Image (cartoon, rainbow, N blue to C red; front, side, top):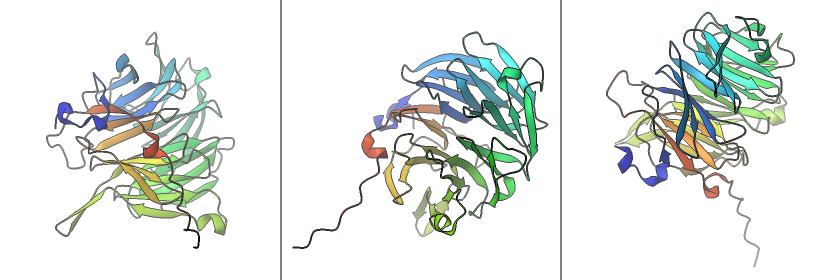
Length: 342
C-alpha cells in the first residue's frame, strides 16, 4: 500500500525517512523536534510540525536508540558499543564512552543530570555529559544486570530496566548500588518494551506475545491488587488466533492514557485506569516499531517499519507518520452514572 492510498487518518508522512529499520523515535520535551535512530546507521533530526529534515548524523554501525539532551543536542546508542553526543547545529560529535557489546537503550535523566545506557553486555552505565573530553571520563558508574538490556524507562529519579530472561529491575538514580526492587515480568514471554506511568506510580510492560502488563511500584497488598494484564494486537480468523509482538508503548503526557504499537500494523489507545480501549487508528503499511507523543500530546509520531519478525522478506518501505491527536482519541471517558430512580 503506497502512502498515497493510505487514508489521511494515518497522518502526514515525513519526507526523507531512514532507508532501513527505525529503531526508535522521540519528541523533544521542549518543542516539536523529533529525533530518529535507524539501522541505516544514521541519527536524524526532524521538525515534525514543518515536515523538514534538520540534520542527519552518520555512524559507522546501526543506531539502536536515541534521546534528546535539549533542543540543541542529543545522544545515540550504537551497535558498535559507543555512546555518542551530537551537537545538532555544528554536527560536533563526542564519545561519552562505550560498552563491550551493542548499546540497546539510552535515556537522559533531567532529575539526575545523567545519561543512562543499557547494553547487551548485561550492564547499565550512568554518564555525566559534562565530563566528556575523553573516553569514559564521563562515566559515573557501571552496574551489573542479570541479562541483556531490552528496554528501559525513567520517571523522576526512578529507573525501570527490562532484560532478557524476563527480569525487571527498579532503581533509584540517587542510590544505584543496589536495585530498589528485583522483579520478574508477570508475562510469560520475552519483554519488548517498558514505559513508566507519567504519574510515577508504576509501569506498563509489553511482550512478544500480544500482551501488556500494568504494574505498580508500591509493594503493599492493596497496590499490588490493582495490577493486571490484557491481550492486544491479535486477530482471529477461521478459528485461528494470530498473535503479534507489542513493540511500542507511549503515554499521553496530559491524560496518562497510552498508545501501543504492534507487528500487526495497528496503533491502539488505551485507558489503563478504566481498562478500556479508547481508539484504534487505521492500519499502517507494516509493523509499528516505535511511538512518541509530543510534549503537549497534540502530535503522535509513528514508525511504520518492518521489524523482521518473519525474517528477511519483501516489505513496505520504512516510514514515519505524524498525526494530529484529537482529544476524543486519548481522553478517558467518564464512567456512566447509574440512571436515577424514577
